[in-house]
Amino acid sequence: MLRPSIYADNFVENMFDSFFRDPFFNRNGVSSTNMMSTDVRDCGSSYEVEMDLPGFSKEDVRAELKNGYLTIRAEHSDNTEDKDDQQQYIRRERYVGRYQRSFYVGDTVKQEDIKAKFSDGVLKLDIPKKEAQPEVEDSKYISIEG
Image (cartoon, rainbow, N blue to C red; front, side, top):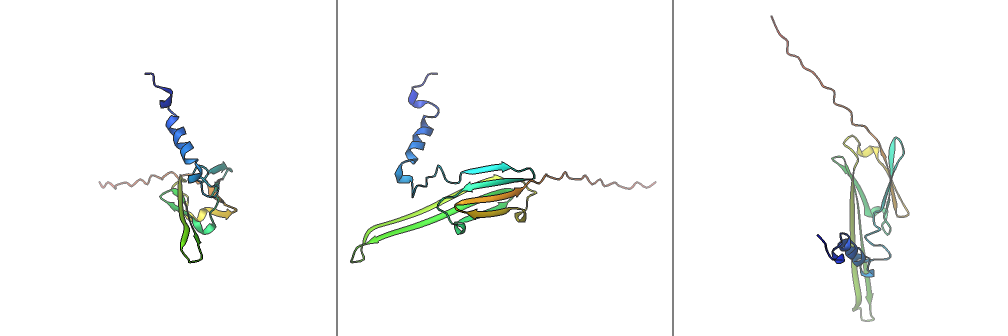
């Protein structure tokens, strides 16, 4: 079936991408399209993960390991107030940003195995590779008398 070009597969994606690149949605040069950009490097016995979190401090970032999923959460709030001489508001703005990203690391990785460091807006994680241990089949025999 032929469709007009405005209905192309990526038209809607491009429309929303350009909409959210608008400066209205961009706080201090940080937009949702460049938040939590992540690089994962295979280092042989471990994975090295680098996640960009510009504008966040160490206290704003939480890492949790649950059911084999490593979840990184970052939350930041900002209040700006400008008052005139009579202490009346001329401008008052509030901003709250919450971001979350999850990765499956496996059920064998424990919380104490993961090393994390936050510096200059970049979270670095060292996650060891652990192979799932095959379950040993424990055969139980029934004794037969006779």
